Length: 436
Image (cartoon, rainbow, N blue to C red; front, side, top):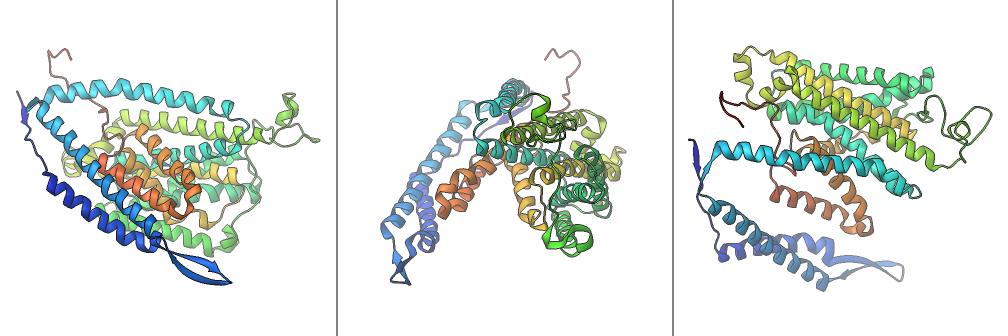
């Protein structure tokens, strides 16, 4: 029987105190320019004012918070390590996989129920529905990038390029050729997938940091092209007057000569109809994306992605075509990003290169990493955190990004592998005669 012997590890109170003092000192250095000093208008001139009590309160909170956090972490680790010194690894792997799966399934179904009923309870609150729509866009982008980073293990820092390709493809086809949303959707996805292959082909031999640098450069190349190719993309001015998607040909606008959604169903027109329709549209696209990725994971190509992520050399030794596996991951991930880009362009009605900067790629990658690479539900939870935290911090505009960064640091301290680091394996080996 394979066993793992766990050793206890404790940290002395003096070490905890020293660690808290170091954190408080860093908070003091950061807090002096951000909190301790401010400018006030006095007689038409700016004067530097001090806020030392607020600064000292901030440092005290940082010190006490770090001390409590360190103590809680140490106690938790000590409890986990001393609870059972000799653990049957096989039993733990089987039990943890079986225990986590039903819970996560129920959480997933509960999240789906909330998503389906949210516009019903907030039909008069456009802000809530708009924010939920933004969350779903990032969920869809996170699931697309999860194919490349989480499943195939290919670090991509230029994923926003495929997002931009999908958006601009729809913008150009709609404004210059009169294509509808539904006609342009598959074409934009195919165009983004083509760009994914174009990126993947010359990077087949690269790994790790080198691959990240190349993908980062690719994302910037696409953005610069969009800025300078004025005849095609409109340059810095972007593309405006992009038509909204319709409900089977029925436009969601005030009644007129042509049939509209409200007139066809005998409803009184309300601007909220379009907001709710766009919400359910991105929800449907996100759910289709989730089902598609989940099914792909169970196919041989999905298993090859995960095998390539774990050990590329072993995969090649087993006869797996690494080139095709990587290209398929890039193409499928890019296609899903292109679909999200089409919806973004249709929702906003205007796109410009400023909407597709590196910061967007960083946010999408942070969603995948913080959620737990390869975890579908983890992407949803991370998208909620990273989208809602800045929104909740609007009342604290001065400290908004500070709170955002602190939340990310805390997540990685508590859960280094992501919010949902555990993943149920796609395949499980069961020995002959084993009833588990």
